[in-house]
Length: 228
Image 1 (cartoon, rainbow, N blue to C red):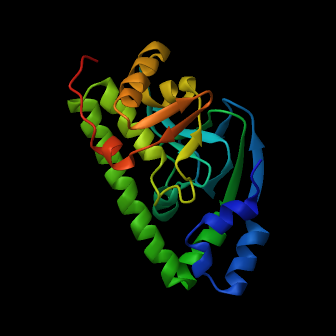
Image 2: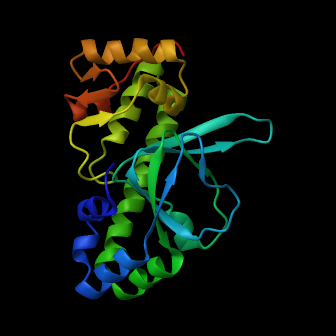
């Protein structure tokens, strides 16, 4: 499994900190292992940590009062989530759940606040991060309302390779078709069909337990008005 040092080395904000700040981060960030389907953070809990994925895969999701579940996004290794809740100092609005066995980095609220108060570069990073996250959420709404399942999966895969949110990802991601189905809200059969469409279009290559992106920009633009 990947280490905390690898996660921090890939984080663009880490390199902008001075030596004392970097030392503090390394000393105060906690690392915990979570089994598949475990809740990493619960909805309505007080937000105490910024969450980074050292290794594995998590999803950000919510369940309505009538039991309808919705997944907002998946976060692969290298990603950090929850900065909005940290800044607003309010209860978390969603659940964070491990889709597979995952190693998670937890930056304490006090450490996060110290970086906010002492690092202009860290503040700039958060502005870019929040803007990118907003664009991702708007894209999700567009797909849900206007596009078909093939496009939904294309945008999901493209989002998992976002170089701003998930730096150092490369062009290959270890992810199963079942996991892609969980994240996209598609059945396993429909997920397989969509992957085949995207592979036939030359946008990605599907291997056992992994996806390789061949044309990230085309995945982001892919549109299909197919039946849901």
